Image (cartoon, rainbow, N blue to C red; front, side, top):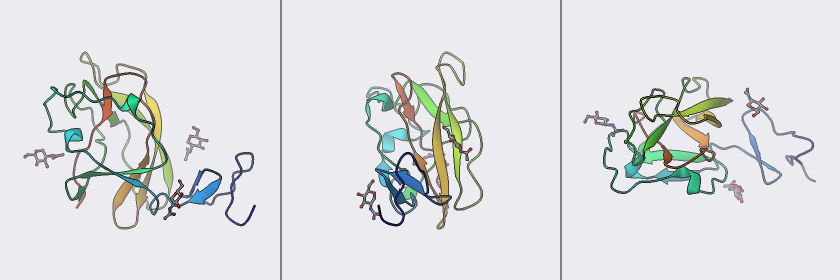
Length: 153
Ligand SMILES: *[C@@H]1O[C@H](CO)[C@@H](O)[C@H](O)[C@H]1NC(C)=O
Ligand SMILES: *[C@@H]1O[C@H](CO)[C@@H](O)[C@H](O)[C@H]1NC(C)=O
Ligand SMILES: *[C@@H]1O[C@H](CO)[C@@H](O)[C@H](O)[C@H]1NC(C)=O
């Protein structure tokens, strides 16, 4: 294997770089745009329910609401928002230092609890240019979906 390769047995990607399909990628340069207006924390319409367990998440994502960068809220969001029953939010602040990849716990709000079903973990990176990218994972059940909150700059 050439330079920058990262066989699963031997993770050699530098800090802030992720190994995807045995290659090192900077997720700030290599993400999928996730632009779903229904993910807005302001969306209280649950006629059309969404479940992120049904999505085959691959690699890293950048959230948008319209033309603006968005982020997963750092606070408990009421149930029946974000186009789903149990909105997904992260329990600790976003990273403040560009370049580092951090783990964050994802909770979900249901039946009056901010963390009703089992939580799960995602990775988050702050990129130069002031946006975040997320390595999203399937939540444990339906209907749970990631919220898009506060627009960045
Ligand atoms: C992004 O990553 C994928 C693999 O996940 C790769 O196929 C693609 O070439 C990469 N794109 C860039 C611009 O690095
Ligand atoms: C994030 O969690 C993974 C295990 O899921 C661990 O290997 C890694 O060291 C953690 N990263 C940080 C920055 O804590
Ligand atoms: C939700 O609505 C408020 C008030 O109109 C607005 O300030 C905020 O930016 C909106 N949030 C999102 C995620 O659209």
